[in-house]
Amino acid sequence: MTAFADLSIDEDIVAQLATKGIEDAFPIQEQTIPISLPGQDVIGQAKTGTGKTFGFGIPVVQRLGLNPEPGVKALIVVPTRELATQVYEDMDLLTGGRSTSVVAIYGGKAYEGQIEQLKAGAQIVVGTPGRLIDLAGQGLLDLSGATEVVLDEADKMLDLGFLADIEKIFQRVAPKRHTQLFSATMPGPIVALARRFMSNPIHIRATDPDEGLTQANIRHIVYRAHQLDKDEVIGRILQANGRGKTVIFTRTKRQAQRLVDELTDRGFSVGGVHGDMGQEQRERSMAAFKAGKKDVMVATDVAARGIDVNDVTHVINHTIPDDEKTYLHRAGRTGRAGRTGIAITFVDWDDLHKWALINRALDFGQPEPVETYSTSPHLYTDLDIPEGTKGRITTAPKKEDKPKREPGQRTRRRRAAGEGDAAATKAPAEGQGTHDGAGVEHRDGKPAAARRRRRRRSSGSGTQGA
Image (cartoon, rainbow, N blue to C red):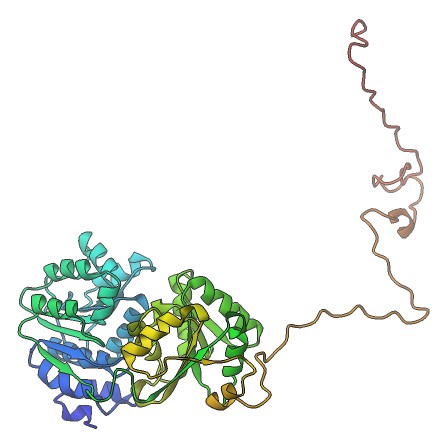
């Protein structure tokens, strides 16, 4: 592997990478950085988890210089909030030795903090299309000076329907610019996008054509599982030998929250990321997962491209994705940065047709998933699960039984309010104390005044006396 120091990268950037133990470049970085640094437009294509962020981020930071003028000079557009956070953190690392300031612009958070950073002169903006257009439309984000433009995960932009927004953004940036487009897959509309907004781009594909569509360092396991048995199967998988951080994908946000609650009840340390959670909750949950405070993350596909955690060992598809592209991006959460990983997919009986399409598109050679239950012997051998493991590591605390009364032991009865006050208190001497409202006698020994009873008159009676 080639070291970053050998790629004509500025020393301060190399030093910043070294603080995180990053010294050698991945193939996509090695091939795109030398071409992009002089200002050549680049289309970078590589599988997820192979270092695309530094591939475009290093040229952006270096080309802006050590002390760029205040104001937006670089724009990085990403499809999801989670990915915006991850790219922001990487760009913040690269600019650690410079005066360059980075701001993340995305929805779900208050405008004020983002606007303040823009007014303070942030030079690099990482953002999602909706919030970028919103602030630009209000005159709060000036993109006319952006000479460095990056589209990250461009194929996902198309899936989410952002093509029209991308066109609006390109109308606002500088006409003379350096443009980079990075994507894991390169469908026709992406190629057309590149032709419209880029100037003679060089297309670099940093994968071996004979390697196949899936990453060689990820082991793919597919089971035909029953819906009612999945939770138990997952509980046992989470106790496999060598299991590290694990991401579990569901199709809907309700499924995600139900699974979070279920696995938490079974004793696992679980966080969640889905659409029913506020942005602050999602960020706290993601931060806890990255920090290792929680080692299981349940997510919908909203997080599929924003979980950039190198030590994820297992990905579990609780529900099968709709197509092969989504499958690749889910599975790509493991096996990152050259590590190995395991991707496990559950296929319901009703979803066998979806698996048939994914199997054919990715050339898995597994047309019939193995029928699997929580008691199936091959589940234990496939995933190195200790024999006898059950899907629960703790049980709910039992209610404490009432303490037994010893023979002859008196019990204390709880009195109702006001009950037995006279008996509990020594009667005061005559002429002392006040009436407490209980009983018919004052504490001074005098009888209480008699209450008059009001008789209800019948209709029509007593009118003359009135």
